[in-house]
Length: 463
Image (cartoon, rainbow, N blue to C red; front, side):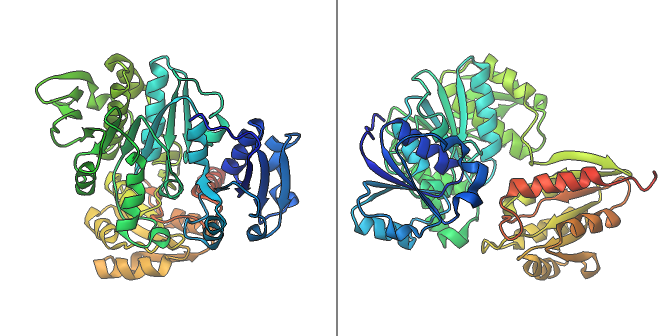
């Protein structure tokens, strides 16, 4: 906080939403900003609109980045640039500081920072935490990996405002002084091993969310997660737990069907667990995490309850799209890893055609495929993308019938139409790929949007 960027030479690498917001934030503070992207101005198009007319910006688009580092004080990298990449190594060799947009924004912002990370559930938890703070009357900004850059609001958030920030492991690679007053890790499961290589490295990135915390801060962790029980031993902050199945020493838990906050001996009732609109144990846990973060921040149980009762969920997470010819279509494109899709499979209680596959993150699908067989409700699997062959082999090893496995390659519309043909009235089609989307789409949101557009355009056979 309180960094003076006036007159400093800063290069922004990557002109996606966070890079554009970072450039504007810095230019408005008197920095001399050099913006770079491998794409040209014409290719970036409307993405650059927020920077039109902004002073102190030097445009170096469509040029190699490694020739532009001389004379820079700081390099701000996008989350898509690994910390081990050659451009980062060269910058450091030249004495150029390397940070990401999240670190930059936290230095500028004066707001109360609440940061949420984890393998699964972080977007729902972030959104719901924001709703609880809004219900308390606090001016609230919901930012970060959720899709709205922290840098876009960092300059305007005041000391009494809540900044609820979703943070990914990619973003945590480039933090330094990032210091949330309240931090949360929802869980740690195998993911992004194509980037982080090992679970030990991936876990270490997640733990960076609390590495600068002090005894005056709070760390909210999942009590049922063995990796987080271990991580808690490293915390200097006050550890608060959440769990939907046990009774922790202190935190948010369920007693006699009621969400409560406090200790087993002394706690405050919030609302009944069955009042939540979002179904499933995993969503109860998301609600408990959000409750814990809000209440350690001083939000009342009454305000927390009001938000919990009204929250209807997040787009692209088990989102009902439509029912056509007796078949329900469900968008769970945010199921980008095996553990997330396991939860989606467990939620299905009708014969379901599942669309699986996408870009390869070097994940193991053994547990997921075992759950598909165990479920008994997954009638067919339609496979797409780079991991289609891996899914087929793993499903067959798990004992799933070969006749119920179908390939649609990279034909997404074809996958949906095939799923429709396989689905029976009273059943469902579920998009929950267990993979990232970059082999076929720009991001998983685009994948979900296209799924919904195609599904909404299907015409009833009864017409």
